Each structure stands twice: as structure tokens, then as C-alpha cells.
Length: 36
Length: 562
Image (tube, helix red, strand yellow):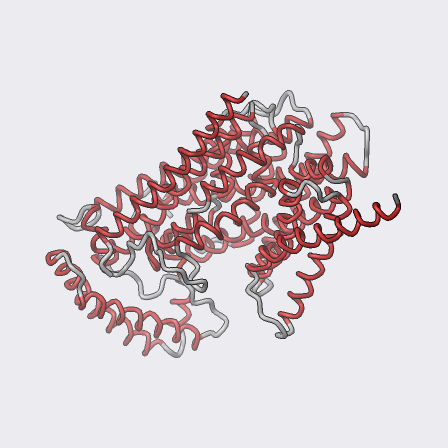
């Protein structure tokens, strides 16, 4: 049970990490292309 | 629309409808009709959640938003993954533990019957009106653009949806959503590639993004905090988090999707993948709008996209001024195009692009004024007509039918989930619990089917008469906000304030709702001024605050008695 909870906590961290990474990639796209 | 378009459209919609019905007519019980056989895999849950949320408005308005305002809107979804994490960690385990069929059923376990009934009724009021708009919004745009009869479009869409939702129940809704998802993505990907290949030689994706960036359309992350600006990273993360928590955590049209999972694991994965996929999906849809913007740098767009508005001016007394405006637009179009091409070569911010963009904005504003002079009652916001205008004029035969099928599919998938949720809540939370207890499973199954039909017809009638009342859409949004906050507050107390009991939260919800309605009335009388989106937050905070106070008073009375 505890092991399962640990796995879920890892999954939540992964989702959070992907969210931060997505925002970072968006920011890089903006830096490259947005000149307006 | 050409013949091939009609074949694609009708064949797609009929296949989805009849497949949904044929596969799910047999072996139904009241429970399987409401939450399936609780055997859904995570990917099916994820698709169901995504297609329920993505209504026709997503595919009509969002590319238009990209065309007008660029990619900024994507920030609105930044809070979604966080909301999915909290729902998976807190809400889902508790719903599973109680093995509930609706979100409101949980409230009886946690509080009492009256709190459950109150939240169910509040949900039914706002969702019933929302279900009408789900059909009305695409029908009005398509009827204007294609010249279809508005009422007939509403009736046709409603009857197809009511048919498979009523006959097939939850499983038909979920299975058809999988096919609808395939149609939606097929249509969008094909449009993306057609758009890219229809640009001039030497302009690929990278060059298109650079061109769009010249007019600030590639702003994806705005770190500046401005409470009046709706789209920046802070409003996206914090505002979006609360909005998505209430939508996915307390709205039965979404809760019903993940309660049907084969296990708690499947439901959690379905929600988490929704959190991961939604942002790229919205990015892609906005990108289509941005590519349409780039396409119209090289191909002349109409000065105004709503054909009915344009026709009104062209046949009225302002025709001379309208023609003059279009002549100036012709000249500007070529100058603007050259400026964009030059900016691509210099790879830097171009002052001339900015100047011509400002001039174009000025011309569009003048066009709006002429439309309003011709008929002050017309709505000059043509954002919703941008993408559909491009589709109808530039996509090949067959693709137009597919894209209209995308719009219809998304409308039907959302409406089906809403009808399923309205019927489930009516029967499980009100009819079976308080009106007719202890009847057979067959009785409740039949009652749920009838409930689906009745809600479907009510939503259809609501959609048909929406056009008769001005500002009804805004009224529906206001009604939603008036109730959503209190419902979210009740759930927030249920999950996070364990010491507050049923009586306290029930009266707290009534008191909070009373204050919200009073604020609304005072707002209408121009005595106070609060944007209606704030009612969500105020309602939620008031329920928590009153709940604490009432519970404390209750506890002190008990101590006195002892």
C-alpha cells in the first residue's frame, strides 16, 4: 500500500515536471519567434 | 457545400450514432446505464473527459482566438495539470471508497440528504441551460455561414444525440466519443497540413511562426501580473486551477466520466493524462488559427468575416462607403504583404509591419462602425466566423464535410455527457433517493431513459428559443457563476474541513447563495459592481467561512447543554 502511494507521488511529480517543461518550451518558442 | 461534403458529413454522423446504439442496446442495468460496467480503461476515460470538455465552441472559437489574439489563450490551461493532481490525490479515492454513482451522492455520506439534494438541484439548473447552449452555439454559426435553417439544425443535432444517449446510455456515450475523437483529430491534422502546403514557396512552419511573431501572435507565456488581463501565467495557474477544480471535481458531466473506471488506478491515469494532453491540444488548435492568420497575409481575407453583417451593409445605404473602405483595404493588403516578406528577410522586428497592422485594425473598426450604422442590433464580433470562413472557401471537397463533422461531433459528445449527467443526477440523487424508493432495477433503468429524453427535449427547446432573447448566452453564464461557487464551497468543506458537519454546511450554502443573489441584484441596480466571474470565488469562500462560524456556534451550544 505504501509502495503504491510512493508510485503515485512519483506520477504526480512527473505530471508537474512535464507541466513546467511545457511552459519552459513555450517560453523558448516565444523567445525565438515573437518579435512583435 | 458540395455533394462529397454532404456524403462525408452525413455518413460520419450516422455511423457514429447507429454504432453507439447497436453496440449497447442489450444487457442494460440502471447502474451500467449510468456509469457503464465500471470497466473503463484509463485511455477511454481520458478520451471521454477530453471530448466532454471540448465542445463545438473549441473548434469554432479557439482558432478564431488564435487568428485575432495569437497563442496567449493557451496560458488559460496552465492550472489544469495541477487540478488533475489534486483531484487524483484527494477527490478520486474518496469517491471510490464510497462507490458513488454521482458526485452529490458522496455529500450524503459526508454530510446529509438535504445537502446532497440542494447541490443536485443547483447542478441541474445550471447544466440544463448549458446543454441548450452546447447545441445552439455551433448551430447559429453554421446557419449563418451555410444558410441552413437554424431551428432545423438544432432539431437534427438534438435528435441524433438524444437517440444514442437514451438508447445506449453511458457506454454508448463513451464509445461514440472515441470515434468522435478520431474524427476531430483527423480533421484537425489534415487541415494543419493543407494550411502548411498552401503557403507560398519558401514559407514553412518556422517562417510562419516568425511572421506571426511580427505581430505579437507568438506570445505564449506572459509573466507580467495584471489582474485586468485575463491571459497571463498567473491567472492561468491560479484562476485556471480553481475553475478546473470545480468543473472536473464537482460537475457530474465530468465526475461521471472517471467514476466509470475499472479501478482507482484507471481513473487517476485518465485524469492525469488529460492534464498532460490538454495543453498541447489547445496549443495545436490555436496554432491552426495562427496559420490561418499567416495564410491571409498572402491571400486576401474578407474585411469582415460574418457574411450576414457584410451583406447587410452591401445592400444598404452605406454601400458607397463600404466599397471605398474595401478599395483602401486592397491597397493596404499588398503593402502589408511586402512588409511581412521584408521582415522575414531581415529576421527582426519590423516597424512597417506594426504600422500596417495598426492601419488594418483601423479599417476593420471602420467596417464595424458601418455595420452598426446599417443595423445597430448586429453583433460585430466576427471571431467565431474566421476559421469556418477559411474552411468553406479554401478546403477541398470532402474536407469541408469532415470539418463540419468535427464541429458536430464535438457538440454531440459534450451534449451526450451532459444529458447522461442530468439524467443520472435526477434519478440517483432525487427520484430514487427521495421520490420513489425501493423500486426494481428495471423501473429505475426506464426512469433514467425517460429522464434523458425529457432533459434532451428541454435543452433543445431552450436552444431553439435562445435566439429570441437578447443576451441570453451571457445570462446563462451568469446563472452558472451564481451557483458554481456555492457548490464548490460545499465540496471544499467536504474534503478539507472535516470538523464542519451537515447542518452547518447546508445553512452556509443557503446563506452564501442568498448573499451572492443579493450582490447580483445590487449589481443590476448599479449599486455595487462585481464582475460575475468573481462570484465563483466569493461563493466558495463564503460557504467555508459561514460553515466554520455555524459549526462553532453549534459546538458551543452542545457544550452548554452538556
